[in-house]
Length: 372
Ligand SMILES: [Zn+2]
Picture 1: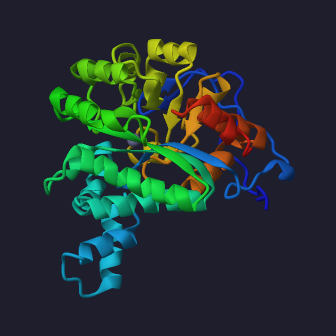
Picture 2: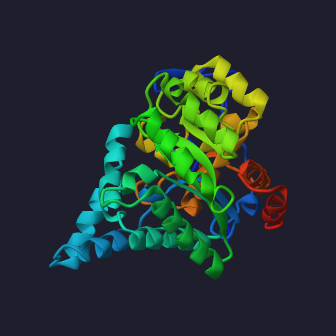
């Protein structure tokens, strides 16, 4: 069922926009508006979808967090506790920074310390995704964060893969895991994940990633583990250009061999990074709502997603954190459709780009393309 547009758009296309300020950085070019007919407005919930950038610990069901906590803590008033838990898990609308956003992960991490719980939350994420017609989902998580009770890296990775496989058996969804290495930890810690995850490559794990707070010039420290990862056959995607450092994107591609970039919105302030991403055809894993929560971008209208798309940069649309940002892929598709008057043909091209950017075989990609 289509949605009729009634409200006029605030942003009108200007033929010659000298530049727009985003977070004190100038974005060149203009935002072109299109007129849609009612027929062109497509229904997001029924669309086949791909999500390549989704964090497990940012996507737990609040109800499950409550139940997992209740296994160990005496909880008197479930309804009251559920409201409190939601308040702890979901970022406020006026969230001020990436660091304030990252606090939302403390409670999920607390309950993700046993094999049973890890298996459960992994299953539930894939189940939730399947129910909104996501056909392929790459979930990332940092095994280092689940060792508080002595689990080994291999046990942690096995548990989430098991949950994913159980969901795959029950639903029409495919997926894989990406192992995230925390940037605030050492290069040795990243190397440990690369080594210990090796046995799972092609068996539920497809890539490694670097995540967490983004400092300028973070890449240098991780050259060795990322080189080793590539040698072992992992794909590489790196969070970069999420909070203000366009040059980090260049570093991620040149120094770390990134095949995709998580976010990358700040290539707008770095010409070299912008050209590199464009010329090499490096897909950007764009997560618009998350970017607004972390104040990387101030509004959907100012998000460079559509400008990138029009300029030939490969963009994919993703959730980042379903619970922390209180969204799912359907909501994210809707907001992008409505902000940029996206047509179905444009959505289709973005879907195909996502399929092509997925870390899977050509045969699997052909299968996913048949859904649209
Ligand atoms: Zn992310």
